[in-house]
Amino acid sequence: GKVVFAENHTLGIYASSGADDQQHANITLNGGTYEFGSGVKIGVDAFSKNGSVTINNATLTSTYVGDTSNCLVYIWGGTGSLSNTTITTEAQGCLYVGGGGYYKTADDHTLDYLHATVNVSNCTMTNKQHVGSGYAWCSTALAVSHDAVLTVDGGTYTGYTAAAYVFSSGGTINLKSGSYAGTTYCLASDWDEATYGSESEYKFGGSYLYYSSSCSFTGTNKSSNGTIEQQPF
Image (cartoon, rainbow, N blue to C red; front, side, top):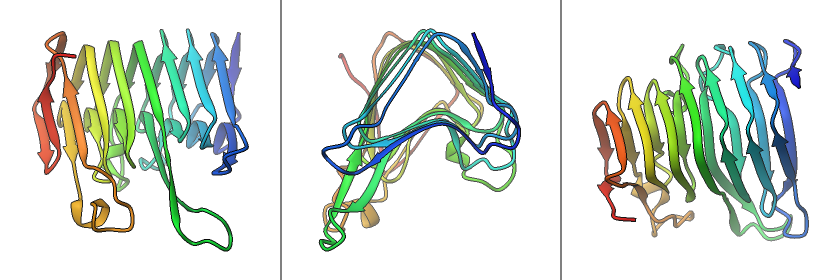
């Protein structure tokens, strides 16, 4: 069926277990149409070290343009799987796979991290524009940060800033097949070693975007200390 979210809601579907190893936050969407409208900043938001997000055969749309520092589907930690799904946004990113730092306990201020691992197959994701002064890297089809890993096999991905973007906090995107197009860039990979490298408190391992000869591309690429290169897979 169809789920239409009210315009006064800023968050659509949300699950969180925080960073606790013993808790799980799971979201599963099997089929259906989800219209998030112009009031929802984040459509699907999962924050969990061991949880999962599964979206199959679904259609997700958003007309929100008020703040372009958001993406429609956020997966922070845990695992994810999207297949045969269409995501269309006006001025948000479509899919953001990431994580972030947190303190291990209230008494132990040693940093630990959430790192999401997500597989995408045969999806169509379209980000139409970038509006305002928000983060341009959120106006993408596919985005990765904080050491997360995203693997894409098949489908069509179109972004305004980029079709696929690895942010300066690091991570990996593997493009095995599919079509990719970006208005500003097609592929982009940035790496801020001074902030996130081995000598910092984060100790992430760089930004890597790999693609195979089975992919097709429209647009130029951008790399600022990140890696963009072909792999045989």
